[in-house]
Image (cartoon, helix red, strand yellow):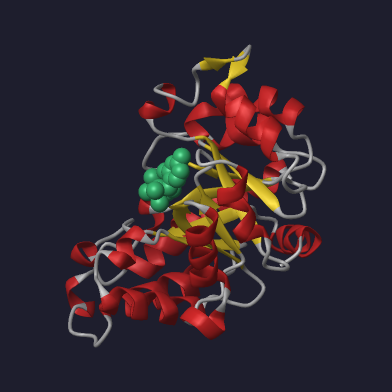
Length: 270
Ligand SMILES: O=c1ccn([C@@H]2O[C@H](COP(=O)(O)O)[C@@H](O)[C@H]2O)c(=O)[nH]1
């Protein structure tokens, strides 16, 4: 999906919501546990319930890998349930020497190899340019580079001064020479909204993937105030607050309520 197609979807749905499919098999309602693939059955209902309000879906790969081969099958089925007009993100936080990154890229971008065909993958930048470039070799696919993450530990390294700027600023500045705003996004946590205005001076045109509203307490109002750009430029993710709004048979209805509430707030900011 191109940036323009993503922006068109945002305008159509009046939403920049990304639903995080962090589907923990232990939290799936009891009535679905008898399904042949409980994770896929749960995700299918979540996707159907939220598709009017979301422009993107982000399965976090850890939740699938933890299930072994079954998890990969659940992931593949889940991708098939996501409407084609939605942006798909493999939140895998990969990155290795170039030779190995190339295989990670095939995992998420080459359906002939793995059966998976995501639009984007999250990548850790700290092994440098040659660890990121293999992901950029796939046409029409996106790299979402970790910049300033939502967790407290982002202070351990990302915010340390390096040659007169914070390390995450250096990541943003340097990586802009690797690809443009048509292929690269950045992760900035919603809990770091205080830095968003500054980040927008570094990357006014890029899309930002912003996790951390909902369960982590980030403010959608602050993220939108400081992060929106001329073409929206935001994908705001919520996972647990939507997926587990109810643990009962009404889980999909409650997920839809949560997604609709976020979408309506977003519509007001667009
Ligand atoms: O800085 C980051 C980067 C990634 N994440 C991921 O986003 C979701 C957030 O889930 P919630 O349940 O809405 O808190 C999850 O997959 C994280 O691994 C992040 O939170 N922060």
